[in-house]
Amino acid sequence: MTRREMVAVLGVAPAAAWAAPEKGVPQPVAFDAVEVAGDLAKRAGQNFDRLEAPYYAPPRVFASENAQKWPGDVEGRTVLALTLLSRSTHREARYLDAILEQYPGRMNEDGYFGPRLDLKAIDEQQLSGHGWALRGLSEHVDWRRDGRSREMLDRMVRNLALPTRGQHSSYPIDPVARKHGTGGAFGDIASQIGNWKVSTDIGCDFIFLDGVTHAYKVARTPALKALADEMIARYLEVDLVRIQAQAHASLTGLRAVLRHYEETGDQSLLAAAEQRFRTYRAEAMTENYANYNWFGRPTATEPCAIIDSFIVAMQLWQDTERASYLEDAHLIYFNGLGRGQRNNGGYGTDTCAGASDPFLKVRHYEAYWCCTMRGGEGNARAIQYSYFSRPGELTLPMYGDSIATVALGGGKVRLRQKTGYPYEGTVTLEVVSSSVQQPVALRFVAPAWTKSHRVRVNGKEVAAQAEGGFVVVRAGLRAGDTVHLEFALVNGWRDPINPHTIRGYRAFFAGPLMLGCETATEVKLPADARLSPDGKGQFRAEPGGVRLSRINDLNELAVAESDPCVRQVLFHAA
Image 1 (cartoon, rainbow, N blue to C red):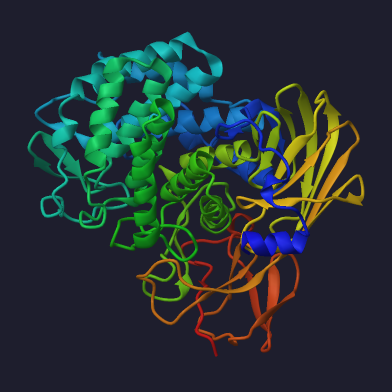
Image 2 (image 1 turned 135 degrees about the horizontal axis):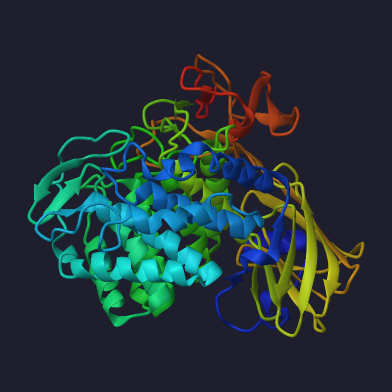
């Protein structure tokens, strides 16, 4: 829906009818400000339970099957996941302290995992693994202000990261030189090029970049900034498509670019990040908003990359306030990330919908060695992204049952949110307590698949306006007040998002939810198909009565690689 159409639906005045709040990008609320409930709480809890299985507990976490290939990877991802899940769910992680206590004894004499750095044979997989080790320690320092974690972080930076300055500018990015096999599920060292032992997971040095930029956010030293600048410059030189870069590494590097933009204010980094995300979206995104594992090689999806794409989309919306990025985040969250979670709480891979056929199938039940830990950050960020604020303004960019305490400038408000989204167009905010004295701009996200918005404050319909992909209402917030939003969800056909998708097919969506048909043989839907509700996330396509259902229900179903839960998700019109 266009802004003009939304204004017509609401019957409201233009944006100039009242003043905008103080400038500056909206900021997500602190982790401790949100108590999440509903489906997101369930998914985060399932993931947390899985991350307390024996594989992720000491000493087993230090002895994974890929520890020799990727030093620091599993233990780094695990600390990162447990730290963020603890912060966002307010649940104590059973093994987090014990893992960190054992870190020093598992490291080499220089304070990092694996062999000592050889600048004549730099192992890109060792650096990549330490991207996660740096990030986990950085998040723990940010949370606990823990001196032990800070000391380990500083030593890892001093003895592993900084000595590589000057080497990343020669990181091998020639597409011809990097074509050395496809690698397996774990990735392998393919060859040595110059001073670099390069991986089949092409570009995984840029996972290390993510750790470097996060460490710079903590330490703020000129040497770390110089290293980050060097690595970003090389990252932006890579032709992701020609080199067939790993999507996960590329998106993790993109998150690093955005973090560095937010720390330095360098506008060129934001412009470059937008361009890189457009490339990813056009060249390596599946029709259910997941990913090709490598650019140009759609062998499987990878939840690590899906989570990165969700975070990137949210960061781009925050930094630009362009509604299209927020819509991407919704679609990635519900259809890519939601689909990837299994009923044991872990995350697994699927086939690439649209790359060669119209079906979506489970490929690997669980990538427990990488994607399950990354699910911790995906769920934690989804919780944190529930609310954003600026002085005098509260933004709801995602909807979900929750309680939040938000500082709005001049006071705090505690709110309880109940919503039917993404199945129904209802959102209710109840003010539990408030010290806010002035009216506040409440911004409710209004994606393109919503229409006919109506806002009521304490039961009375009020004027609102359309602004930047949001329905905005100005209201005083006193204890006991309620603000209720109703809207209709738009159902129907949507064109492919990837130009490489098989020709002649379209997808069917109910609001933000991609729908699929459980069938072993291809079916067609009428060009004028309409949906009749048949339960939560279940529909009948009429005429014909073909049963369609949401694809993001694998965390509720018993699936396996031998029973891949085949869904047709792209259709020819009958």
